[in-house]
Structure formats: structure tokens, C-alpha cells
Length: 334
Image (cartoon, rainbow, N blue to C red; front, side, top):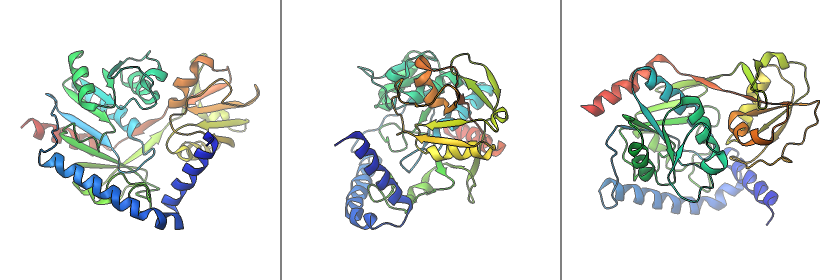
């Protein structure tokens, strides 16, 4: 089966999660099996039949219930920098997804190779300057992180369903537009756990318009940065130019719609999440300006052209969210 056919099948499946589709009915029995396994697994952890490990410092999980991008990584960056400003010494964990290291866990630094440790990990490290470790086993990664750093709090990018790592605070990130899709678990829907799981977390953050009891997270990104020269200039300077926008993220339409909201006219190309770019991946002439996400840029930098730029995106959070995190941390110490 060719990769393109696999991508088309995956796209059809994901579309069915957010549209009315007969495919959902066909897959529903498999979703019931998925729920049974998920609920049983969590129960075994809860009663201690399967052991979980508490790190010696407070642990914050920033996760989601749905497959695909919801904005976890930008929130992790915001949270790490917020806690640093308060005098904490945060360290960060991540899966290191798409990384091809021969062994795990791996320590991550700003100059790390994204093809070894994963694209999101390099972005986080560059934007926070915090100690960081990645690996599929979050406990092993957390222990390695603490062994080589003096961090007094750990933030895990993703891992809500990684119950082997105990957590003091759970932060759920929700897509404000797609929400929970059709409400079904995999493979009939996008959910990794039943939607009722959202009522058990400590904080709910919504990427976009928030419902009652949720904190709204908004994006801001007014500059672009050149991949070759590192020159920065206002995004508004691009109005009226010929632009090709590319994105290999969980929800590329969010990036494209953000650019359109700035008044830009785009030709767009979406790649699979964590796509491993090569020199031939982006087809654009020298007259066309190429815009990409920061996550894409860390993988394209080694063969970038002078007309390739990325958009650093920051998130804005209400003051009440930061205060609640601090209050929850103080309670966990008590």
C-alpha cells in the first residue's frame, strides 16, 4: 500500500469523526472494544494492580482526549515560562514523537537534532531554555531529567493516558472548534478516552472560544522569521504577495486560517503530522514566499532557501489560569 493511499484513508477516517458518516456505524463495535480496554487499564492502575510511579517533584500533565493537534505544545511553552518567571525551575517531558534515536530517554537541548529527538521537543527547548528529556516511557524520561538537572517541577507535554506516571495536576486542552468530534472513541471517533474523562481533570483550556468552566487560549503571532538569515519582520508586510503556506501538524487548517485572518492570500499544502521533510518536499519557485510553522521549520532549516519563513506562535492565557495552577501546586505540596 503506497504512503499516499494510506494518507488518503487516514484523511477519510478523520473526516468521518467530525462529519456524519456511515463509516462511524461500521467502526462502532471496535470503539466499544477500545473503551473496554481503556477503562479496564485505568482501573488496574487506580487499584494498584499495575503500578504507577510518583516523581519526587510535582508533575503537571498537559494532555488531550482527542487525536490530533489541540495546542498542547504552545501551552506547555507558556506554562514553563510562566513558572520560571515565578521562580520555579521547571523541567519538561515529551514523547519525542517522530524522533529516531537508537535509545531512550534522550536529553534535549536547543541545538538538538529534531530527526533524533522529535520536532516538538526542539521547539519547546528553544522557546523555554528549560531542561528537557524525551522518550516513550515518561517515568524513565522523568528520572533521567531529574538525574541531570535541578528542576523542582515537571511538565509533561502529552501523557494524559500515560498512567504509569503519577500526576499532581492534569490540564486538558480542547479544540474550541472541533471539540470532541462525534463523541466516539477510536476508531469510530477521535477520542482516546470517554468524553466524561474531561470532568476529572483539574483545569480545562480551550483553544478558541471556551465553554463554561474552561479557560480560553488565544494565539498571537505578528512576526515571521527567515529560516536562513533569522531576520524577523512583521507578518503584515506580506499582504498582497504570492505565498505558499505549508504545515505538517495535527490540525493544519488552524494554521492556514490564522494566516488568512491576517489578510493573506495563500496556496496551501498540508502534510501529515510530524512529517519528515526532504529538500524536494516543498515545491515553490524563488519568487513565491513560503510560510511554515515553527515545528516544520526546525526540520527544514538544514536545506532551507532564502524565501522560506516560519511563524512563531505565542499563546495568551488569562491571569486566572496561572493563579489556579499555582494554587493547585501549593495544595499538592500540602
